[in-house]
Length: 499
Image 1 (tube, rainbow, N blue to C red):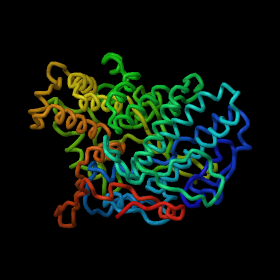
Image 2 (tube, one colour):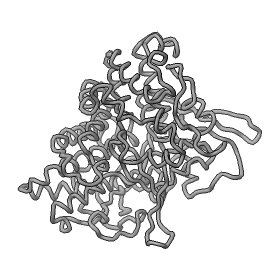
Image 3 (cartoon, one colour):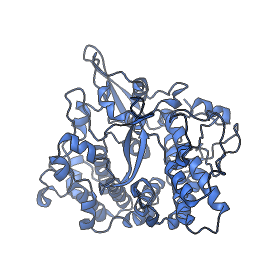
Image 4 (cartoon, helix red, strand yellow):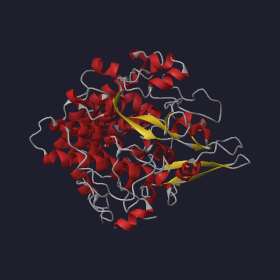
């Protein structure tokens, strides 16, 4: 609605024509009269997940990228300037809420998702006798929790376990908007986390997989909810709960292994185009929650700043603690400098069939078994359960190392201490987990959250025309580690992040 806070509700879920995914309503719609059945609530909830993606700005702000040097053949895209701004930790310019891949676009898409969830919840509250709505209430609550969780971890200071967490969070919305020019406030990070937790724990017992007859992995099923809960409690520092919820999906190593990405078997032997398709298929056991996002991220290898030779050498092709070789597909089918992990296949939605006009989009794995296993390993390590952390690490590596051999490649505390020159077992385990996650999730945006949670310095290279390299750094307490709110949010009463 281009009003104040960029909170819009989508009409497409109800079969009502909107004017394109980038055209937002100029006023707040009231769709309560449109909702008159359980089926329409179910349809509406397909829009309760953000249709934007954080991949562009989190990945390009992290240490998974580099300056590949000046050339004349980099592709110029509508989002190329925004990608460059990411690399130099610069805020986006006014109007970027309509450019996919920007922080403003994700902000608006997340609040769109929240608006859909709130509209569904309002209908459900007004129809308490319909027992079929119970499962959809659960999904709406968890989806609302997820969108707020992503927002607070992108636009506010990182939650500090056992800290005061009294810095500004984000507006937590629990009802559909009924006015155009509403005023909002930024609660504290502590308050935001408390409300996320309440939605999560209230919604979780209501989830019923049986209602998802079609495309269940695009909804919060039981596995997806437990994976989200394990991530939430890891970030919150409640390691026992993180382990508990992860354990509802992950049991024995023999059960876990077939659920992990088959990097050293199927993926390693697949042709690039086949791998490109497989990675984001909902049929992959590893993918627990999928999202559809308006994005040109699949073209990111054509730009100057991004995944390159130095990044590959530090991650997917780096020496690792096992002494073996990673099976990752690190450079894609392109030649230098157009490196790519080749994980995302660009799709296209035509606004009118045959017109050639429309919007590119990708499918994004939002929650995976692979991340869940590493999150549990970190929770184990953080709570001094070192043997269990090692068990999860070795299960993970059994599908990542070429010609994996337990006798040669099993990771131990002694091996970690020697490889990283770290004597403290907890510190060594967490270092191992973060480095494994860095290589695993190249181009998936997850590294940014780990860098912030652990206060790690981020370093970016700058290469001039003469081949000279200099570096810039983003320190632990640099205010640019909080992405900026859209400028128009000030008119809604919000305070921008400091700069």
